Image 1: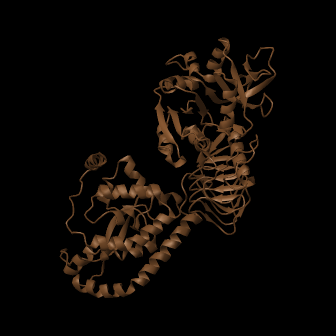
Image 2: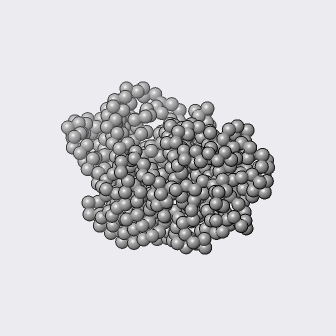
Image 3: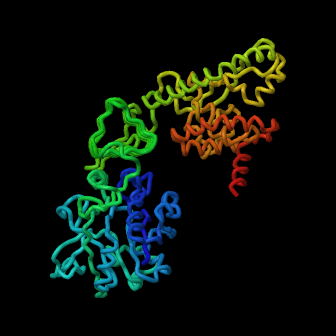
Length: 581
């Protein structure tokens, strides 16, 4: 049996969240909705999957990859335009020589695939429409009679005015079909399964059976339904037993509520590298994403999901809400039953959204004055002081040598640019700007400007940089960060993809130090910096610190001869293209 996942992202729903991400990538307890469908297929033994993509397909392909993480093989089908759900089947028709299963990936569908296929085989028809009982009154805002199908006593779909109608059901968008159904779909024509294909089959007297799925179904047509899905997933995981034991399928729980992260306490899950203040109060069920920071006297939960890189500042309260990635919630802010995406707060009941302009209440970036920034700065400062103390014998030996070789001077200052580890003044936004600062270094030249013998040795072993640890203490540098650049080098780093490096403070060491050599050109350094910023975690910073002494020995053995520096950004981009080829 073939499996086709409909990930064309043609429907405009769940805005404004889907203005910046495809609907299949909408985070459900911090994992894209499409991931749950792939896990269902993998559990059912469906290993070869076709994924039909159209709009913003690159983001979906980047996340899914080859499918190896789920133990499946994914093949992508690129559409040139919007064809609708049935039109997507016609587009891929040459590959559909046997029975196929069509599944939407912009909804949460806890389908027992084996039971549905067994039902399809039993009745021997051409099409089985997967349906779900109506959960509430037909008149509810996100469900209309046009979205329902009529079913007779035999379980066959009939017209809405047919006298044999015994009940109305909700079509889930999932279908099990034989290849013969493709002849009813016109080529290169926008065509929908519900509104076009099913009426065409009924008009041709082709029986269409309905399989009533007992498991949880949520179409995610509204933000209220999105919040309900988050709560159902959390509650299912909270009430479930061991993760490999499936619950009995029903309309109120999901069978396999897999959650990324470890269990901190019953009903409380946390991702990597999070920090929770001991005075914070967590009421289960709660999920906390990677790199989150939760301040003093914060109250979170129940039914709350925090995405990655979320900061909840001191004495804030978050209940029954979804806080998406990279959101800062300010001190004393109270959020109840809301969806928050950085500076935008949304009421799921009405769908109305408000953009908050006060960065001290809600923001897309973490203010430097928050407790999370201060905590990181304290660790850096303590680390720099410990290194200075450990290196004190060496420093006491070098000081008189430098003083004698340079003619009575010990230090020199060099101007560099980058993000400082701590801002000056009271402006929280200043920390995110590229600034200039002076790095303290041992003097390596005589009064006439020529390099002396001691200075040449210091430069060779990079010991002239040891006073930069003072810059770490003053907040100019972080212990681990991107390379501080000279102003002339910053002028060369103007391409958009290079700008990613400026999201991280300049550092005394970093990936640029352990992966490049003193003879490396600017482009190699920028590539290492950009990769570091994209993959940065507290663990990776610790590993870089531990590997720095080995890198120092390697760099010291490198020849003093340097490559010619690239003189303009076009040269850098051309070199990058050649490197990529």
